[in-house]
Amino acid sequence: MQKSINRTLICLSLCIPLIFCSLFLAGTLDYKSRFFYFFPQLNNATLCRTGSPPLRVYMYDLPPRFNVGLMDTTFPDNVSVTAENIPVWRWNDGLRKQHSVEYWMMASLLYEGNDESGLTRDAVRVRDPDSADVFFVPFFSSLSFNVHVRNMAESNTVDEKLQLEMLDILRASEYWKRSGGRDHVIPLHHPNAFRHYRNDINAAIFIVADFGRIMNISRLSKDVVAPYPHMLQSYLGEDHEDPYDSRKILLFFRGRTHRKDEGRIRTQLHKLLNKTKDNIYEEGNASEEGFKASTEQMRSSKFCLHPAGDTPSSCRLFDAIVSHCVPVIVSDRIELPYESELDYKEFSIFFSVQEALKPGYMYPPKKDDAVNMIWRQVRQKVPEIKLAVHRSRRLKIPDWWT
Image 1 (cartoon, rainbow, N blue to C red):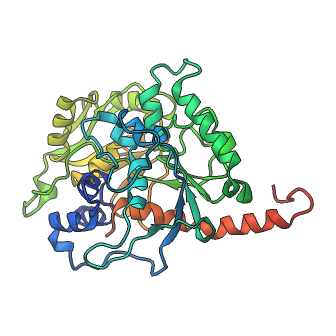
Image 2: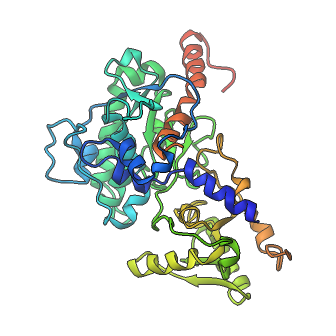
Image 3: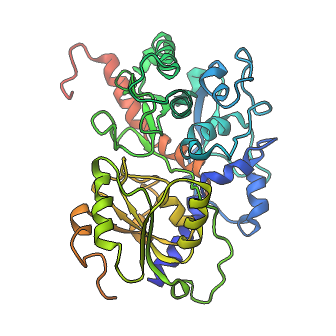
C-alpha cells in the first residue's frame, strides 16, 4: 500500500488542482511563472506533452453578461473581456468554485504567449475562425445556474433566458452551421448547467464533471470530463518517515448521507460502516467549520471514501488526492478526468455498489496543470469531428450509421 501512496503523490504532479489557478491568472495572467515560484523543484522538469502543435481555438466574443458579468455585475456589457480586465476569481464564493472550470478555460485563452521557461501551451487562441480546430463558447452556464436559480421549479428565470439567447447566437453563427456544432466546445460542468436546451446543442463537445444527469444525451467519445477544484488546501508539509503508518484513521467520510439516485448508497454505507473500528463515517455540511474538520481528518486517514452523491462524482475525490489520502471510489457509473493519460487504479481503489454493500468486503486483512490537460482531451476529439463533418457534407441521403 506504500506503493499506492507514492503513486498518489506522483499523480498530484500531473493533476495539478484548479485551485492554484487563482495564483496563475491573477494580474498579468503569467500563470506558469507563478506556478514555478511556488514549486521550484518542477522548474526544470519536463512536463508530460504530446509533441503535437497546440490546439487552435477560436473563442466567441460574447457580451460579458454571459460570463464575467455573472461574477461582477458592474462589468460593462459592451466591453470585451481581455487578459487585463478579466475579474479575479473570488475564492470566498463557496461552492460556486467547484464548477469554475469555465472561467479557467476562458482565462487560459485570453493569456497570449508562452511562459518564461519557453514551454508551449496545449491550446492557443486564434483570431481567424478558418484556421481554428475548435470553437470555444465562453458561456458560464454553471455560474449562471448558481447565480440565477433559487428553485428548480421556477420558470422563465434569467438563467433560462440566457440559455435561449445563447442558443439563438449559435444557430445564427456560420461556424456552428458549417459543422452542426460538432467542433464547438461548451462547458456544462454543473449537473444543471444549460438544462433547458441541452438537446439543442448536444452535437458540441461538452466539458462535464460526469455524466450523471446527462447520460442519455452525452457520450464519452465526444465529451471531456474535467475535475472539480478541491475545497481543501493542499497538504504540503508531510515529512513522516512512513506517512501511511503515521495515519491513525483507516477510512474517512464526511458529508451528506441522504442523497438521490445512485447516492442512496451513502445511507446504506453509513449503517454498515458507522461503528466499524478505526473508521469515521459522519454527517457533515459544506461550511467553514466542516472544511476545517475534513482537512484535519483527511490528513490523518489512510483511505478516504468517495461514494456517489446526487451525481457519481464530487470534489471529495480531489480533496482526498491533495490530502495524500488514497481514494476509495464507490460508484457504478463514474467517469474520471484525464483517464486517457492517468491510470486511476494505480493510486485509487474502486468498488461497485454491490461490492461495497457486502459486509466485510471492503476490508479484507491486509506536469501539467489541469486546464492544459482539459485542452489536450479536447484535441483528441478533433479527428472524429472532422470525419463526421466531412461525411455529413457529402451525404445525399440520411446517414445510415445513425
